[in-house]
Length: 56
Image (cartoon, rainbow, N blue to C red; front, top):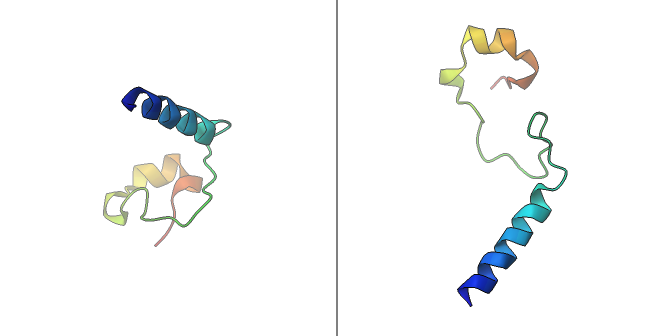
């Protein structure tokens, strides 16, 4: 029984991740929280990754 559940969970995870681009993720739902809290955003981060920083 546990082995069947593990197999089903693996299949579901692989199905969810199929085609997912970790470099440029597309979110399909509401964001729960900021990926990086505003307190941790440094000038170096904004300089090297300007498109990935979301202003609060």
